[in-house]
Amino acid sequence: MSHLFTPLTIREITLRNRIAVSPMCQYSSVDGLPNDWHLVHLGSRAIGGAGLVFTEAAAVEARGRITPQDLGIYDDSHIEPLQRITRFLHEHGSVAGIQLAHAGRKASTAPPWQSGHAVGEAAGGWAPVVAPSPLPFDTGYLTPEALDEVGIKQVVRAFGNAAERAQQAGFEVVEIHAAHGYLLHEFLSPLSNQREDQYGGEFNNRVRLLLEVVEEVRRHWPERYPLVVRLSVTDWTEGGWDIEQSVALAQQLKPLGVDVIDCSSGGAVPKATIPVGPGYQTEFAARIKREAGILTGAVGMITAPSQADHIIRSNQADMVLLARELLRNPYWPTYAAQELRQENPAPVQYERAWPHH
Ligand SMILES: Cc1cc2nc3c(=O)[nH]c(=O)nc-3n(C[C@H](O)[C@H](O)[C@H](O)COP(=O)(O)O)c2cc1C
Image (cartoon, rainbow, N blue to C red; front, side, top):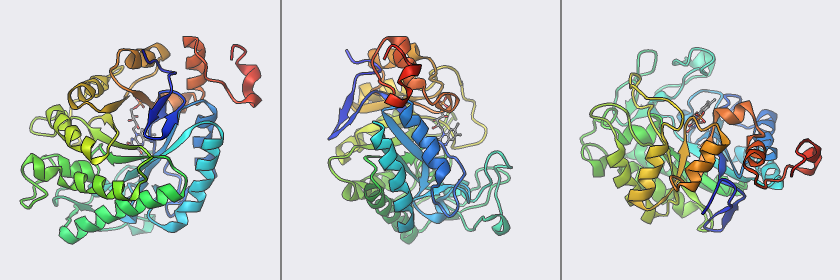
């Protein structure tokens, strides 16, 4: 039986345990470039013992950044500073992953600690922002321009080029961000996609863009490296995207070379009622794993070592992704190993702090 500290091999990459740092925007970049903040922030979590360290959402196009301060991978100048980070993560036993993202209609906003709302050019913002249909997310957001077929092809190519750069930068896992109400999710959800062409309407049309992006990324991303897709498994809203559609989509993603579905939820519309609580999304990972026969990641309010261990032992998911708990405690994996009486050696420099290891 696998547990939280059983290594996991996917294609040719082995994670030392089942703990991943969930992607977390830092809103600390200039022109999409990572800097010392990103090195120390991500590096600390490698030292802390995570098996897989994901960067925050990295924009595949400049106009696909959520805020002007987002990380980017839309230009070759991003490769070298990212390389510095992946080298460090690798040296400390973590696999480096990057989340490739396009913010769609939620682009050009201020960081959450400011307003979170649309910003103008003076504050580094831009227009237009793009989406499947010209419907703003909420008041305080820009009304997007609907992408035409040329624009859609450009987005698909941008994801492929980003995957190519990710490989050059030394990443060994790519996650495509198709959750939280950003561009790819906007196409999946009938709440944001009201197109009447081949990218809108019935299920097979709404999933088309994501399938094209996956195929393009797989063309540029080495066979030996894992590919993950993050979904918002449900919009928690009547008439929206839901678990049944997620299962059907996961079944189509697997033969295209997707290895893991990272099961999140929400973000399509501002007023969904979400039953947030410990492990509230874990059931989605369990159901997709069972019904689509694909590896899954569970995320959302996973904080206790025994909770995380149970998710793996009971075969509900193949890995757990932690976000806020790893902000509170970057050494959570080492601490969890101690709690669970497992091995997850701390770096030699820190050994005296963890006497059992
Ligand atoms: C500061 C912060 C930034 C986040 N940025 C991203 C992101 O870039 N991409 C993403 O998919 N999710 C993002 N999330 C969501 C987390 O990855 C995670 O799914 C969510 O916080 C639930 O996990 P938790 O309960 O362990 O925090 C962010 C969350 C936080 C707290």
